[in-house]
Structures are given as structure tokens and as C-alpha cells.
Length: 172
Image (cartoon, rainbow, N blue to C red; front, side):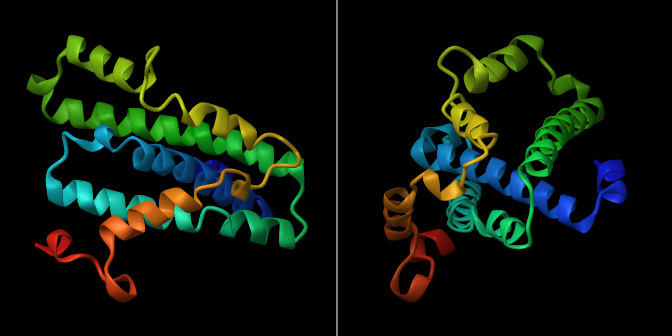
């Protein structure tokens, strides 16, 4: 990804950013719709993750809108999304391998396959994100075509109090 970033124009980098913003928005939307995915997290980490998911979903179209405002084209947008998804998957694999090397006693192939199946198997928790990822490659696509307003309202009510302050149970 560093090579692509270094060799790309500022407009192409913005297209890349818009693609990554869409990717994170659809993943965090999936987490907000299926919070059971996060059950294994400690309550503090889960609450932080849910808060961040709301934040990512709220600004899902900002980079996309700026890209189009400055005359960004479809081909660059689509190509940079391909690079972004590839880089995202590659980064996950790299860091997972690095962590396993540091503590190989924790690696268990059966559990690894079970985890991959949990997210990407026939009833995988992240499968609902795939059609939304593919939508990005439609020339007429805009992130706001994925309506998340009711979902955001639900989670804002659960996570935030008056004037957007975190509710007390999230601060303890």
C-alpha cells in the first residue's frame, strides 16, 4: 500500500481514502446490526468499539463527497477501492501472522478455521457486508444509499446522554 500511496496523485489518494471509509462503514454497520459479534470483548473494549462504529457510520460519505466535488472519476474510485480492499486484507493477514509468531503457543488450526468460518462461512457474521462492498463498484453509487439513520439513532440513544456525552456506564 505504501507504494501505491507514494506513486498516486492526491486525487487518487482521496479515492483510496473514500474506499477505505466505505469499507470501514459497512463493517461497523455490520457490527452495529449484529452486536453479538462483539460478545467476546471485555465490556470496556466493546463499548469503545461500539462508540467508534457509530462515529465511522456517521461520516461514511465525507471523503466520497469531497472526491466527487473535486472532479473524481469512477475508474480511479473503483481501482483505488480494489487496492484498498487488498491492502486491508493483506494488513490483517500480516499482523495476525506477526502476533502468532510472537506467541505460537496460542495458535490452534482448528480454532483458526472456526474463527474464519464464524465471520465468512455459510452463515458468517460479515457476509451481509459483501453486497454493500460490491455496491461501491456501481458508477451511480453513493454511500448514503445504504440508509443507516434508524440504526444510528438506536445506538446514539443507547450510548449517549444529554448533548452527546457518553452515558455513565460507559465511563466506568
